[in-house]
Length: 362
Image (cartoon, rainbow, N blue to C red; front, side, top):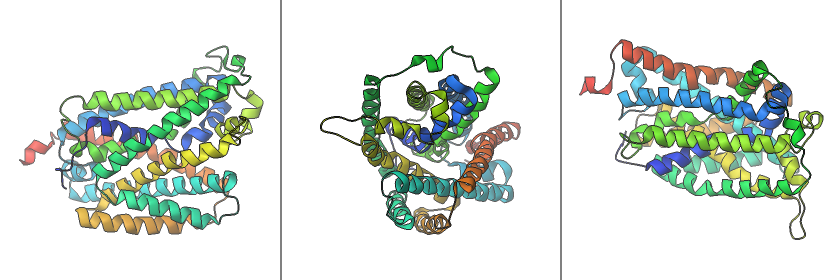
C-alpha cells in the first residue's frame, strides 16, 4: 500500500460528508414519520449520537494500526484464514450496497427526470463515472469530493426557499409525543440512511498528521451530517401533514415541485440534477471500498474496480420491483449492523485481549 499518498484532515471531512450524504435523505422523512410521527427529526439526532460512539470505536481501532487499512489488520488480529473470510465478507457487503444504491438512483432518475431513457443506459453512465473516480488513488477522490460538497450548499439554499411557503409547526408538536420506543425504531432507519462512514477504515493511513485532531475532524463530519439530515427531515415534517407524508416516497422532491418562480420552474428537476452528484459519490465510495477489500496493490486495485463495475452493472440489469427493493434494503440494514458496527467493535476487543497492534510486527 502506498501510504506516501496523503490527504488533509479537511479533505477527510468532505470525504465523510460525501460518502454519507446520498440516497437516504430523499425517502428518510417518510420512512421515519411512519414510526416516530412528528418526532422523526429527533431520530436523526439519536442516530448521530450512536454514530459518534461508533466513530470512537473506529478511532481506537485505527490507532493500533496507523499504517494499515481494515482488510490488512483483520489478518493480524484474527489470523490469515479468518481474516480472508472477513475480507471477502466485507467485499460482498460493499458490492451489495453499491448495487442497491445504483438501482435506487436509476429508478429515481427514470421516475422523475428521464422516464423514456432505458434504465441500463443510466446505470451504465453511473458506473462509468464511478469507476473513473474509484480507479484513482484516495487523493484524487478526496479532491473531487471536496469540490462536490459545495453542491450541498446549493441544496440547503434551495431548501430554505421552502420557508416562504405555508408551513405548519403543529405537525411536530408536542415534542416527544410519539414515545421513546418509536423514536428509537425511527433512529434505526436514520442510522442506515447515514451509512458511509465505513470509508474511514480505508482512509486512515493516508491522512496527514493523523496523530492529532483526527477524532475531532470525523466528529465534526458526523455533526455536519446529523445537522443536514435533521434539517431536511424537519423541513419535510412541517411541509406535509402526517397523512400526506406517509403516502409520498420522496417528500423532499415534492417540496421543490411546489416551488415556482418567475424565472425558474420545476425546481424538483433542478434539485435532482444537482443531487445526482452526491448520490454518485456514495457509489464511488462503496466501489472504492469493495475493490480495496480484496486488492493488494495499485495495479490490482485498478483491475478490480473495472471488474466490480462490470459485475455491478450486470446485477443492476436484473428487473427489480419495489417489493424486492424493500427486501434488499432490509437485508442491507441488518448486514450494516454486522459490518459497520459489530465487526469493528469485535476487532477492537480482540486486539486488546490478544494485545495485537502494528508495532508488534516492527
